[in-house]
Each structure stands twice: as structure tokens, then as C-alpha cells.
Image: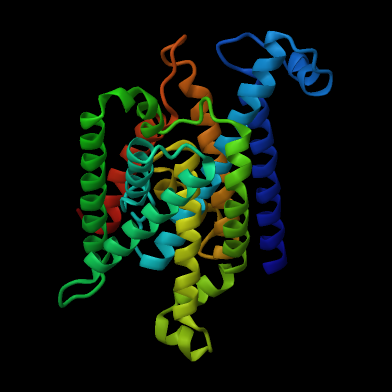
Length: 333
């Protein structure tokens, strides 16, 4: 029976990989400029410098790869946060980590003229770490200690504060508004592969570590006392999970800006398929998050064509009803 279940889960995993490849191909083919599958194949194998081939190589391909990477990073970050805090609403967006990272990036861009990808990623990591620390400390205050509702409220407060501060900076420096406005809405449009190549080592390292933590996370969720009784170093595990969250969320914000709700809703779908075993939930979350964000980006191209809706707006439209449903069902609010 266990062997059969494992076989089914492997089949589901490879099915998600196939779907991800399919939506990536669709992302490269479909958009405002008419292209075909045959033309895309020629652009990738027999590049001739034409306008259509340039669009495929310089715009569509980077966009698909970046959406895949950001979707996977945000989803796994949300999965780790929900396991670490035992809060079904935990995610980089809901807990203000995206907003904090965005605040630091915008501040660096406006006041210190930070333009390099390394500088932006460093600011995003610092902002993510600072925000996560503040939320954790604020959620732990009081006699009851750390609770899911207090964490959610602290995260919402941090998200509102950093968003307001970011808007205040832009109001002071209106000339820079156009430069960062589309980035703040959350978008994978116009991003270069150079930026992705600078950030992706952090994401790969964090994803690989997260995959190896699956079994230990399962033990931790049985209860901290049980985990310690089984010889697990819970402090080290929590610290490692926190570092992975900061790397994943900070990298995603550095590339695409603050994109909300992906990290909150995707792990719930992954648990519906993978059960409670994080050895499967984590890879399912990565693949499903990538599929969802690429699909949302494709949809964003057609809503108000020839203009585009930022993919962060699309993810919010999809995620808000799911957020309300989970909040009412799991937290009783």
C-alpha cells in the first residue's frame, strides 16, 4: 500500500513538471506580438536577428524563466513559514516580508542610487530579515506567547507600515515614481536574465536545503518536545528554515517586486495532494507555485490588451478570496 502511494506521488510530481514545461512554452509563444510554436523553435535554434526572434529571446524567454523561479521561491517560502509558525495564513506577503524587502530596495534605489543586481538583492535580504525579526518578536509579546492570530496581526501591521513608508518616499521623490511603480506592483515584465543569474544561486541553495528538511519538519510538527526527545536540534532547524525563508523571499522581491498571496495559497493546494508529508509538500509547492505564476502572467497579457496588468495584481485577484476562506475556516475570524 505504501509503495503504491509513493508511486502515485511520483507520478503526480512528474505530471506537475510536464505541466510546468507546457505553460513555460505557452508563455514564450503567446502575447501581444503574434508568434507561433514553429517560430519560437526557430528563434531558439536558428536565431536570425529579426524582431520576432528578438522578442522571443530577449523578452518572452526571460519572462517565463523568471516567473517560474519567483513562483517556486515564494511558494516554498510560504510553505516553510506555515510549518515554522503553525499558522495557515503565513506567507511572505501576509507577514509583511515582501513589503519590508520592497521598502529597503526602494529606499536604496531612491536615496543611494543602488542599481546593481547585487546591491538590490542585498537590500532585499536585509529588508526581509529585519521584517521577519520584527514580526516574530511582536507576535511573541504578551502572556500567551506566540499565537497564529498575533503573528497575522503583527505581519499585517508591518505590511501596512512598510507600504506606507514606501509610498511616502515616492511622494517625496516624484521623479522616481515611474521608475519603481511597475516593480512595486509585482511584475516579471522587462526583467533581464542577468538579474536572474545573479539571484538564482541563492534560490537554488535555499530550495535544495528546504527539500532536505522535509523529514525534520514532519518531526517538528509532531511537537517540539517530541522532536527534542527524538534527538532533533529544533533551534538549528528553525534557524535554517528562517534563513531559507529570507533567501527565497528576498530573492523573489529583488527580481519581481512584492507579489502577494502566492506563498499563502499554494502550500494549501500542495497539502491537498501531498497530505502532511513535507518531503512531498515542498516540491509540490515549488512546482505548483511556478505553474500558477506563469499562468497568471500569461493571463495578465490579455485582460486589457494591448496594455498589461502586473502579475502581482493577478495573483492578488486570485488569492484574496482564498485568503478570506482560509481565515474564516482555520482561524475563526
